[in-house]
Image (cartoon, rainbow, N blue to C red):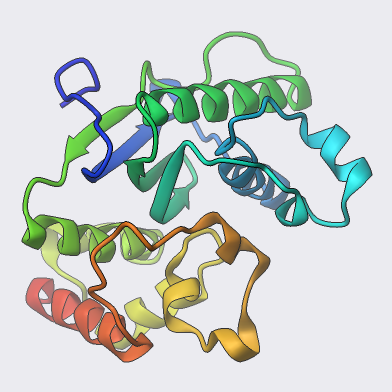
Length: 224
């Protein structure tokens, strides 16, 4: 489904995703991942912001007061040639405005850094409506386990061969929101946790053990 089919309305939940044009790599190194993650935070604002200007004002972009948000982000994961987001709009057209700012800002950064021109992403972003409680809960596992394909490329077709290894790899993966759900936030809180606003989402995971249990159940279900 695309955003032309689905009406993106507040208080509903959506799986948003896109990939590089021609399936090209859109994150070539850690600096690229870091810039996109910073933009997940900064683009979610009523303001038009410039990363370089903000970095002159604050020690970390996550300290910047971005004002009112356009969307609430429940989960995210960045992969070398695509990304996944779980969103609900806070304002009318919030997702479209947010994704427009995010895509434009990152494309400008990427093209400038790598001296290229033209579109970076494969058309407009794609959206799937999480129309049931079961599907919405499943999306947390699907999004957060995406990195497993980096160590087990055929896991979706053939099942996960080593459930413990898969889980540990996903948890250690820096470019997703899984650590912000599972790790002890009193000890290991990441600045990136400021990207998330879990308040509008159903409270499926009241404690870290609950998402661990959910992930292991999902891994076990698709394991051979």
